[in-house]
Length: 276
Image 1 (cartoon, rainbow, N blue to C red):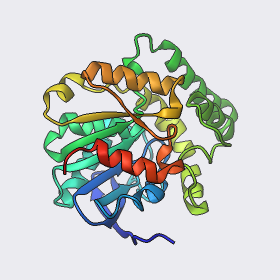
Image 2: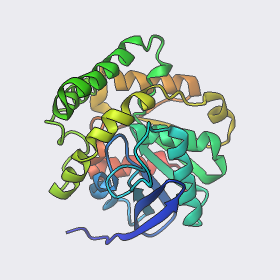
Image 3: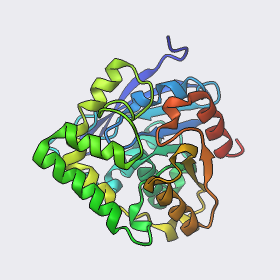
Image 4: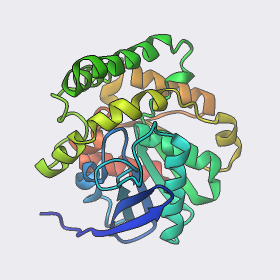
């Protein structure tokens, strides 16, 4: 049983309602999941953070319990980042520590670039910023193939390719967040079609504003999974670090190390966030 009970809240934002879960005590740490994930994938790591932070994990708009007010459309990183800024403001928590994984790291990068006053420190864990690669054509072609596979063959075949591209195992459920409970897996798998249809390609084309990040005054730490070396997602993180003029920080596990190594991941994240 979780030791830290979540206070579940909903925030109305333009076009959506954002489900978020507040646990723990201390400075606010906003936790942004990626792709089809939701707040539930952070349950394990939060257990090791909630004695040090007030953790706020949420479902990005269109995922799980964060419902849209209209029909789905292609996702925009800036809209997601505006949602994150509104969450921080609603909590009266700015500037807040921010952790984002995968596409959630891209959201964090946009948040830090355009809402610098909302962010104390950002840890961007394995952001898929493929447009920063010297030659992104192969990575773009891979994501396009996943999208086309979804259109031709459906969710299962497409997610199998997506997980393989990211060096993850699983059948389209496992591999996205570690050892989630059945309820979380069911919710996340229910987001796959929305992600494949409206998230994968728009998010793949996102390019962070490196100049704004370098000059905005927000410390940005790029986290890379120790087990991700040799995979494209690792190269993307290295490319971002190089542009920022920083050194990436190794984190336990792979792309979803927060789920597979929650205690060690929490300790690494705590150190990466810097002085309290």
